[in-house]
Image (cartoon, rainbow, N blue to C red; front, side, top):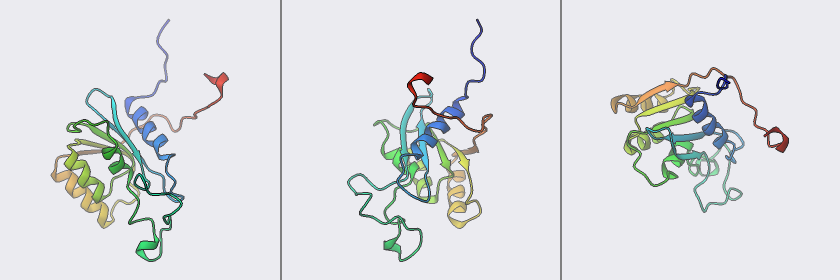
Length: 165
């Protein structure tokens, strides 16, 4: 018997983990996830956009507009930073990060400082804005490779029905 055909690639697998992680986000407007992988294709960190540990999701705002302190922006940690901070306690030099959304300038600083060598992203919807111009400039100057994921599949459906296993 030959091996099964149609299995997902490493890029599809790790981006899938990032997308699944995003489903943990309580943000009503944007859900982003990230997954860090070492040179042996082992997951060493994952995260999603949300409030820091110890901050109650119900006590902070989720608004996108208004006075700065009345919006989510001063409080939410982005998925990439959370993945770095939530890593399994290892040195991240040489690792790759998979992220649903191209990282902002602040997350790019953390990616560079952590020693991550490659960013694989799904969406670059804010391309051309100053934040992302700065991000790309820093990643480029630091020698961090960036590429859009190339998936051969459009979606995967997960089922929690016992009979589907």
